[in-house]
Each structure stands twice: as C-alpha cells, then as structure tokens.
Image (cartoon, rainbow over all chains, first blue to last red; front, side):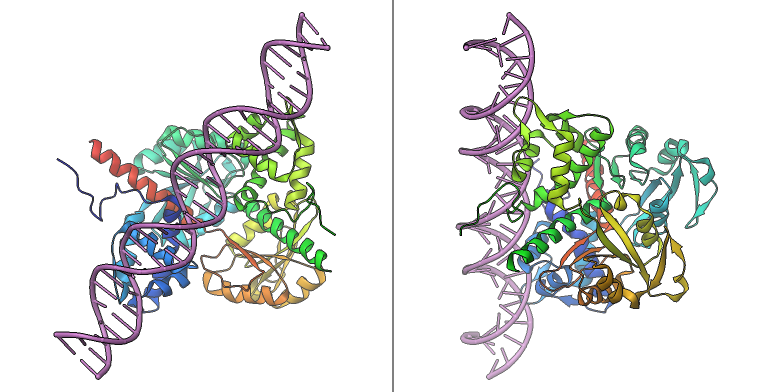
Length: 224
Length: 224
DNA sequence: AGAAGTTTGTGAACGCGAGAACAAACTCGT
DNA sequence: ACGAGTTTGTTCTCGCGTTCACAAACTTCT
C-alpha cells in the first residue's frame, strides 16, 4: 500500500524556518480571537505577526490549504490548525532544573501554562532551596529527576543552572529519558542524536545589538 | 580620496549569521583563556563553540586574518579582536523596564556586567515597586526614563513588561533616544527605521521543541 | 449570468549561508 | 636547507529560504 500525503499527515516536513514562525502566527491569531475578529486576510495577519504576507502565505501552505480565496482565513479555525500542527493542543509536562533568579521567573511565567506547557517539577541541587514553593510547586532534590520523568512521562526539560552545571544536568536528563532540552545556561551542550537542544542566551542578544549599535555610531562619525 | 578597506575598517559588512555566532566564539575563547590555553586550532575552537571548523574559519575571515597557518590562533589576541568587533571592549549602559519576575532575574544576571553591559537603571510603572533595590540598583518610576537616557547616554533598552505595555514602553524608549531594544514581552513591536529590535520569547522556543517532540512520537507509532 | 474586484496558493528567480576541498603559509625534524 | 606535516584562508558548489508575480478561485455588484 502506498501511503497518500494528506494535509493532516504529520510526516510531511515543514521547513525549520517556518516552524520557528508558527508560534508567532499562533500568538497573533490568539490576539485576534480575543479581539473578536472572525476572519482575516494574509495581509492583516502578516502585519500582526511582523512578517510580509507572501512569506506568511507560503508558510501556511506547508500546513495545508486553510484559507478561502477572495475571503481570507477563519481566525478560530486557523488558530486550531496551527496549534495542532505544533502540538500544543495537548499538554506537555515540563521539568525545570535550577531554581535561581531565572528559574523562579520561568516557574512563575504564565505564558507556559497558557500555551500548553505544565511545570510538573522544580529541581535544585542546593538543599537550602528544597521545600520552598514557587508558583505552587515545591522545589525538590535534583536526585528525584529520574523518578519524576518516568512517573509523569516528561519529554521536555529546562536548564536554568549556572554554566558549569549544565552539561551534567543535560546528561542526567538524557539518561532519564528526556528528549528535548531548552538551555538557558551560557554553554554548548553535547547530547546524543535524537535529542533536541535549543538555547536561549540573554547576553548574546545584547551583544548582537551592541555590534549594530557600534556601527551606527561609527557611521555617524563618518558623516560628521 | 578613495577610502581603503582595511581589516579594522568597521564599515565592512559582516553577514548577520556570522554576527550572531561571534558572541559564542567570544564565550568559548574566554573559557579557554580561563583554562590557561594560549593557542588553539580552528578545530578545537569550533568544537568548543558547537560549530564545524570550516564555518568558524569562514566567520573569522570576515574580521581579518588573525590566525597563523600551521599553528592556529592566539587565544588572548583573537578574544580581544572579536570583543572589539562586537563592541564589548567599551561599556554599554542599559536600562531595564518592567521589574517583575523576569526583570528581577535580568537585573541580577551577572552575565551582563561580565560581558560589557552595565545596568544603570531599573524602571517600573507600579509605585509599589519603587525604592526597592535589586542587585544594588533602586527601582525608579518609568517617568524617569527620558532623563536617565539623556544623562547617562543610554542606547540600549530592555523590555520585561507584560505584552500589553510593551509597545508603549518601546515608543517612549524611541522618543527618549534609545536605538536598540531587547524585547522579552511576547509581542511584535513597531519601531521606526534605524531602531533595532531583537526579541526573546521563552515560550516560542518551547513550542518549537514541542513540534519536534510530537513528530518523534508519531514516527515511533509508525514503527510500532 | 457575467463582469469587476479580492485574496489565496504556488511556480520561478534570486540571494545568502553551509560545507567541502584545496592552495598557501607556517613549523619541525633531519 | 629541504621535505614532511599541520593549519589557515578562500574558492566553489549546493541547498534552503525569501520574495516576486500571477493564475485560480472566491465574492459582490449590476
């Protein structure tokens, strides 16, 4: 039997650049839903998402054909289709390791819960932090990682430790069965094939801004 | 007079993809310096930075010719050259607006200070937060923005407010003379030409991981 | 019903970035 | 001094992503 490619076939590969933009579209659509909008054109949605309309339409075309020519997109329907494609119609259990300043902020961040993620455990190696409750979740010893991952079927881990600890944490996460890691520590993680790592480095973004800022100043000097 | 292009000419344009990796190289080099390494090959540095060596060499070639064939790179020298190119040999004053959980974490983040950024002010619209000191800096009213930007010659602003307030904050920042904005709010900012915006969205990264995680599961189902 | 106006979905062209591969330039040993 | 070994800087090729431009398909008006 030859498998047919339908628009709901999850095996279709969506370009990575498009995947990275889908959450932005999702957010824009949610805003439109909250504002009571029922229909929108690619031009309107593109503006709300900060991209141009051709790119938006091409991105959406990878998911299927959810618009109507001459009319636009049904906001609610498109929102659901994108949420389903990303996989945030289900609830993803998440563990956060490292409950310092950043870990606190992440644990309290309401944007996780509202977008399909549930923080099921906060872990820290420092015993002084244990029993403390953050956002209604008690901080537990790092040693509990394996048991929690297994019991709650956790696939996604967040690392908010100092850089020196991050590789050890990642190794333990992978051994425990976690297959997706979001790394906030300023470090390069080595993980086996099949494990996805994404990193967020607060200071790298500032440095990129500084680079452009420096060029603005020197460009001004040339004029002066 | 025809202006000659030298290796120290800041007007040379470095590809955006390269600019985004320079801070990673800088971090790796700092680690090597701390470990007492005086020389390294492109292969070693590339591994420390998590890229392949051909890409690293190509990136470095945009800055100039700082290596020695048959030997490698002088770690300290290359570190300085990259820092100078990015612009983090000087100190950049930064204001942070929105001192909630995330703002606290950012204000306390030691990685800013150690990488050439100095938090000169913390601002919040909520009077209950004023006078509170975070990381040795007192939280002040948002209305003080203009005066601080002018007095301290601030070019870079960080937005850590809720999404609804972010556009207003950005508008005020731009009016006050800020030309680079790092936005942590889940929103799309509209700014005039000449102002750079970079955004960090904590939940978008998780959603990208969820997408790939979902595909891993469905791939496993096909096998089973 | 048909013409005019809108908006999507997509084919095609273009530009940028990644990676392979190699010549140039250095060190080291003899 | 010279050959063998090492490592950089750069050229070339390929693939991906962005953008343009337009046909197809819908709505609305007459």
